[in-house]
Image: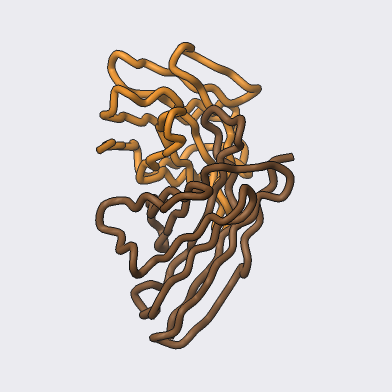
Length: 112
Length: 116
């Protein structure tokens, strides 16, 4: 089955700095690569996703880069704000089955 | 659009009882829904894939007789935790795949189950 690893497990940055979280996966059939943000006790929220035919996607302060050959994709948050503090999950999956396999999560703390 | 609801949001029950959790897609049809379990400070673990009109597919290590899943319509899937025990206490989250979707899952708000 799919093996997903996410690094780092915790990340603390100063407000305004950038944050990068990396996700590696094992299943070469994966073709859908989303990142979710989850606040305590809440549902995961999709913040950005990318499909296997694209190498990079950007949405304002958030970007995702994909290296399908190396089987990893990364979340980039620029100009971080305290409200970015949350747990972030990568969840590579297949658009054929719809299944997502979640990484272990990264707790991001943005200090004011 | 693409709203998913869950009911109840929170439930406390005695050990040995069964609990049913409903997952509904409110404004779209979903042939496929997923059930996840999340323990405190851990990730979401996929329990099973629920397909409308057919038997659910369970992930390795998930007991299908313990966690009964029914997907009777294109907008409703239910998860029943049978003979619940304290170790079943967790946050259960469902998600739905839009019938015309190509990957994005829409998540419900979750159900906090506490078994005494």
